[in-house]
Length: 269
Image (cartoon, rainbow, N blue to C red; front, side):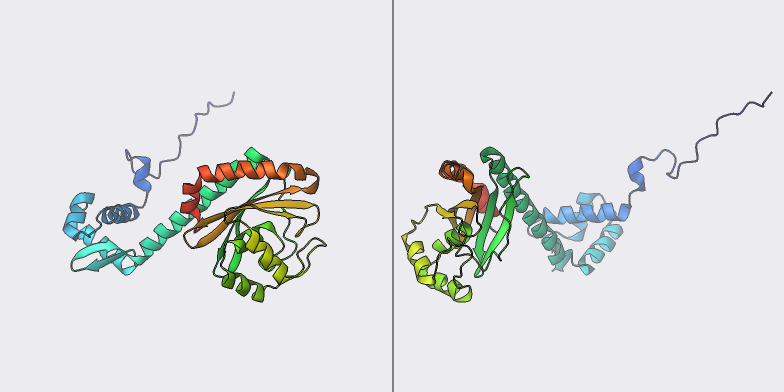
C-alpha cells in the first residue's frame, strides 16, 4: 500500500503579507506621477510645501522628487514655484497629436464603410503634397502609389485639388519644382493647360480626375481650406463603377460639412 501523499503547500508569496497587489508597484514612480499631476493643475505654479500637502507626501520626500523631476526636465523651478517643464510638455504634445491622428483615422474609416470606397486625407504643407491617411479594405483597395505622389500632383485629384486652393505664385512655384509630365495617356499635357484648368475650378468645387494618374481608376477630391492650410478628402473607384463617383462625392461633401469641426482639430496631424 502506497503511503498517503498530501498536496504540497503553495509557494510563499513574494508580496508582503496582507499587502494589496499594488503595493508591489514602484512607489517612487507613483509619487512622482502624483506630483506631476498636481503641478499640472496649477497654471501659475506652486511651492513645494503646497505640492507636498496636496499629494499627501512628506516634505523631504516631495523635495527629493521635485529636484529629480527638475533635473530630468519634467519640471522647472522659478522663484520657488514649480511648473511643468519641456519634457512634460513634449509628452503632452505627442499625446495630443496621437489623439488627432486617431480622430481622423476613425472618421475616414466611418466614411469608407458608409460609402463603400477608399478614402484619402491630404494636406499641402511647406510646399509639399502630404498624403497623411488612407482608409481602405481588401474589397475596396486604395490606388497604389506607383509614381511618387508628391511629384505627380498634376495627375491625381488630390494634387489638383490642393493646387487649386493655392494662389497663382504658389502654384507656379510648385510646378517649377515638379513640372507636368505624362503619367498615362489621359494626363494633362503641360503646365499652362493645368494652370488654366485650376483657374476654372470653383473655390469649393470637387475636383474630378479620370485615369490621369492610374489607368482603370477615377477619383474625386473635396477641398477643405482652414486658415492658411489647404487640405482635401478624396475617394477613388474602379473605372467600371465610374457612374457612382458623383453620388458618392455629394454624400461625402455632406459628411465633411457635418464633421468640419473635428477635421479642423485634426488638420495639423
